[in-house]
Figure 1 (spheres, rainbow, N blue to C red):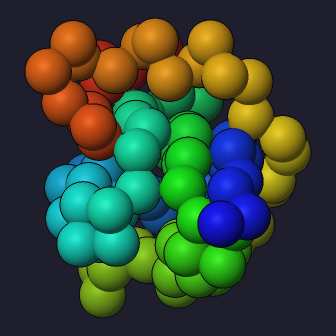
Figure 2 (cartoon, helix red, strand yellow):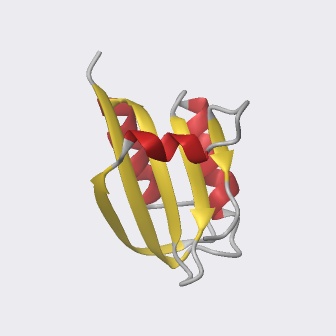
Length: 99
């Protein structure tokens, strides 16, 4: 299996619209590991780890977001393995506090 670890920042109207809960639900449904959190600048940040095609699909979904969101941009870069350590100890995918 070809695996991938990607970190993204989503900009637009993505806070206060259920975006993090939606990302958590979509990631868990796809067996993706990682986390999602709000950032103080109004964006949302996420780290995804899993099969390369599944991670790419998840990033594409984040470009659309839930119905109430208005995504303007998705910035993508390689993730760092130690970034997965931010998850809650017993979870494969976590919603983290605002950063």
